[in-house]
Image (spheres, rainbow, N blue to C red):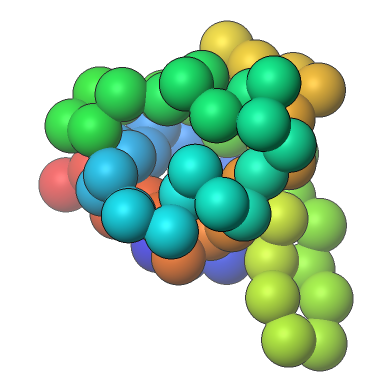
Length: 70
């Protein structure tokens, strides 16, 4: 996905198998593969980018788990 996407941009969750191990266990079932979500904000770091979604604003997620919507 575009790591410079603006708030309000729609993205699709790919359903990465690593998702369950990379987030806090209490948030492990937050996303559903294939569902569309809305970007709230992004945090760009040197080695990764965190995505925060409007639907789940307190859960930081990895940008590599999402595809841009066309």
